[in-house]
Image 1 (cartoon, rainbow, N blue to C red):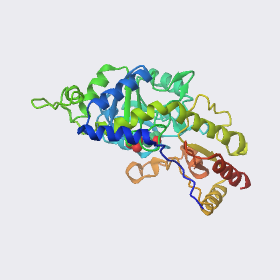
Image 2: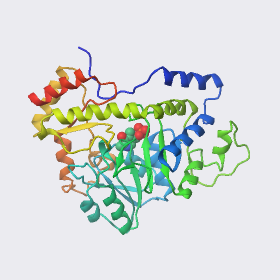
Image 3: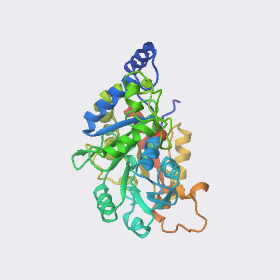
Image 4: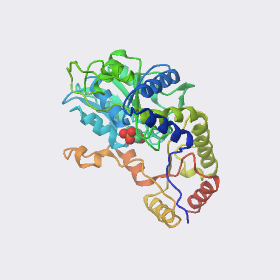
Length: 371
Ligand SMILES: *Cc1c(COP(=O)(O)O)cnc(C)c1O
């Protein structure tokens, strides 16, 4: 029995040829290819874009660039990838665990409000499964409370919100381009913003804080006589990665259609009671994952057993971060994170990637509906 994969990158001879082309130039680091990828992404989003080596470093550099420091606080949903928490913590700031709205899986603003203090500097909304619903309310909340916003749109490359591309407006948007995301550059991440101070700062921070090093590297050169003022990192993207990313960006229409088609198929055929939000509009959303919620924890565990028997992979988005030793404050009881815990115990992520066959989807749907 062939395993039905949870997620998978879709690579063809085009990406392979692009990588070979870069390898043949003999220059593998950050150079012209990254420059061109950034230009193409800037055209796509209509704003400034910087490429880095992972989505996590995109988040970390954004946290550093807005000036987060030891003791500052950032409001973030506990139900997210540990990347968000580590990125915040890397600046010395504390991620403050908030509950989710059970339908959108976005941050619950009532809970966020109750956790505001004079140390709160930012809010980090995560567009779980590519769904941007509620983002306007996050912006309103942030404005009223003078907070910066770092959007994690790693699940949402290509998604639209009220007719506009996610990342084409707002404060700072970070997107991961790792191997299984809507588009990939192997590993990789991008930062999108109109704030030129942020962009200029991250441009240097990704290259060890060396001032104006990016321009030299785009031209195939390196800085010899330079100055450094801030803590920087080696977080830049390589030309090999950018070559893959450029091909993938060109394929977005196809990759996007395929994800949307499969998601609609699930939406139309999985029993309604298991759909988190039967009204999700998959002509606007490009879903990175498809999450369903069973009636009980026991039922979810039974589904896992049957999936295993039939070699169907499944996932968990996500283990709540407040349960992790590093981010669990023993002084707190976290009882207010009830939607988060209910989701964690009953939800399951089912396979979704552009290479998934309709026959495989049918099998998955049949298993779920029988349960
Ligand atoms: C993938 C992902 C990240 C991290 O991206 P990497 O490129 O893997 O570092 C961050 N947040 C979310 C929601 C993600 O899905």
